[in-house]
Image 1: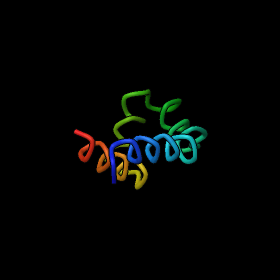
Image 2: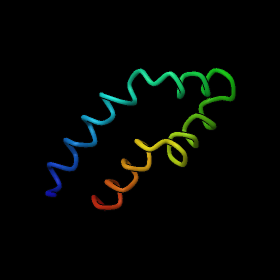
Image 3: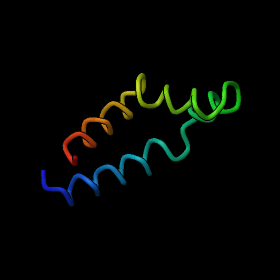
Length: 58
């Protein structure tokens, strides 16, 4: 994929899956922002896919 296509895909994924994510909001309220971000990056399938795209972009 080209760089522009990857950036568009990342934006689309964030808008579709992460914008109103119930799990992220729950962890943020119960455990704080840091815990919610760690969950998204390490355990969430969407977060893992975004991480792969980030590696391709850098």
